[in-house]
Image (tube, protein in one colour):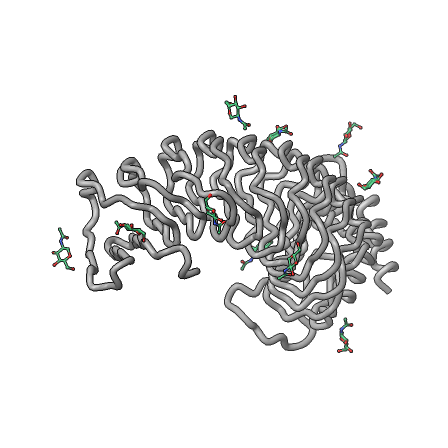
Length: 358
Ligand SMILES: *[C@@H]1O[C@H](CO)[C@@H](O)[C@H](O)[C@H]1NC(C)=O
Ligand SMILES: *[C@@H]1O[C@H](CO)[C@@H](O)[C@H](O)[C@H]1NC(C)=O
Ligand SMILES: *[C@@H]1O[C@H](CO)[C@@H](O)[C@H](O)[C@H]1NC(C)=O
Ligand SMILES: *[C@@H]1O[C@H](CO)[C@@H](O)[C@H](O)[C@H]1NC(C)=O
Ligand SMILES: *[C@@H]1O[C@H](CO)[C@@H](O)[C@H](O)[C@H]1NC(C)=O
Ligand SMILES: *[C@@H]1O[C@H](CO)[C@@H](O)[C@H](O)[C@H]1NC(C)=O
Ligand SMILES: *[C@@H]1O[C@H](CO)[C@@H](O)[C@H](O)[C@H]1NC(C)=O
Ligand SMILES: *[C@@H]1O[C@H](CO)[C@@H](O)[C@H](O)[C@H]1NC(C)=O
Ligand SMILES: *[C@@H]1O[C@H](CO)[C@@H](O)[C@H](O)[C@H]1NC(C)=O
Ligand SMILES: *[C@@H]1O[C@H](CO)[C@@H](O)[C@H](O)[C@H]1NC(C)=O
């Protein structure tokens, strides 16, 4: 039935060009079939894709789990001499879908964004995705397992890859170092192991790198210094060890730096004089000793400072006049806590003994 409709429309299109060219664009049958399969695999049975107008029609009631729930398919129609519509985005966020990921993304040559964050999707990432030309993949917050397929390294168009909060295991494939357009790589809250492959040092366009809550091995690699555009770096409880490379000083664009729970030799406070735009700085339980440097009080936008569970000494600089600090002194002898809540800014500085644990 769908096929006859399509040929009817094609007939109209050829007959009445240019009058009906825009009104009658449809999605090619191969792409319609791919979308139908992709939805079926994910168990998205409450929706039907209408290739005649590129709509995702709701066919039965769907409980809305969040205000941010969004099921939509986006097409790009009538580009120059091409009268077809092509599927460019698939979004299915916050719908408790409990199915699997389909390899047929590879049959959508124009697909640029695939976002299925916050469902209960299971199974693995199909290696066939390596044949896509995606720019964005978000699988955030599902129950996906298995290893990250090395084939993802073939999607050189990729700008954003978010695999956070799943059950991915194994090591990061070195092939991801080929994704030189990558700006955002988020792998937090999985069960990833092994060292960070040295090839990741090639990802000079990275602005956002987050690998919190994994079970990596080895130390924080020196190559993070290559990521000069980085504004967000999060290595919280990743099982990587210290020290924090001193060339972190080269990352001048940092606004969010969060590192915690690294073992390894004691080190001085990392050199962050160049990171003048810091907004949030967490260096918790990093075996840092010595003075808390004075310049930290002059970082203009700093909203959050957490240097707890280290062996830092120092006091709040008299230069630090822009905020309203409340000092709570009646704490156990070996602890100094300064809490400050003012203009949405919060400051937490603690001097717990490191043996106490976080
Ligand atoms: C749903 O997602 C699509 C594709 O990402 C986007 O264009 C659209 O604005 C979103 N809709 C809402 C209501 O957020
Ligand atoms: C349109 O046609 C021209 C000339 O045949 C071709 O070079 C161009 O790639 C076509 N554009 C699209 C979007 O197909
Ligand atoms: C999909 O839905 C069917 C019917 O509701 C169910 O039996 C099945 O377990 C679901 N999950 C998968 C992965 O197919
Ligand atoms: C895709 O990636 C795999 C693993 O990295 C590689 O062996 C294969 O040759 C690549 N395929 C293409 C078509 O580039
Ligand atoms: C970084 O991104 C820019 C803009 O997208 C691109 O032109 C450049 O080739 C990328 N860098 C590398 C090393 O690929
Ligand atoms: C993390 O990996 C180490 C081996 O490197 C292993 O001994 C340990 O049990 C793992 N921890 C978790 C929580 O998986
Ligand atoms: C740190 O950066 C400087 C200046 O770019 C460079 O000469 C040095 O080799 C780097 N150190 C390491 C350990 O990479
Ligand atoms: C902290 O550094 C000291 C001195 O280098 C070292 O003996 C100790 O084992 C380190 N602690 C941790 C938890 O790595
Ligand atoms: C921080 O703790 C260390 C060791 O417990 C202590 O020697 C030092 O005086 C404390 N610093 C401050 C400012 O309380
Ligand atoms: C600082 O906070 C105290 C207590 O909240 C308040 O009474 C005082 O006016 C504040 N000072 C300034 C300069 O905002």
